[in-house]
Length: 88
Image 1 (cartoon, rainbow, N blue to C red):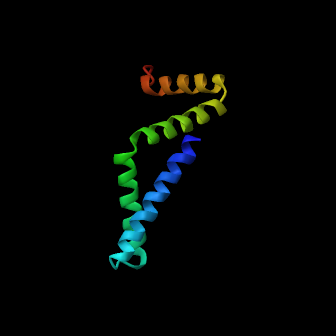
Image 2: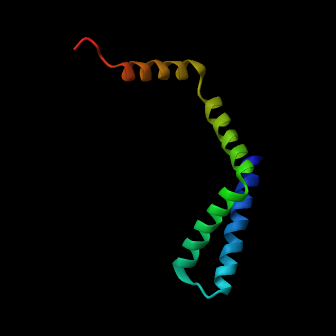
Image 3: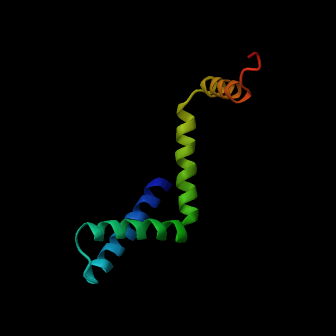
């Protein structure tokens, strides 16, 4: 639910900025580009808690879908790569 809430907040911010910039006379691709940038920045600055909740939900869903054995095997491969081959 936090993903949906944060997405709706970001879309509302983008729409609000687009409306304001449209009334100020901005048109075309510039309107969309500036509205998206300003909406993203405003969401990042004014709604960090909702963003963190959405990110933790995505992380929880991503790690839940991978079995534990696969995650452990991935960690072993990463350790081997980081340590490198000492034999050469």
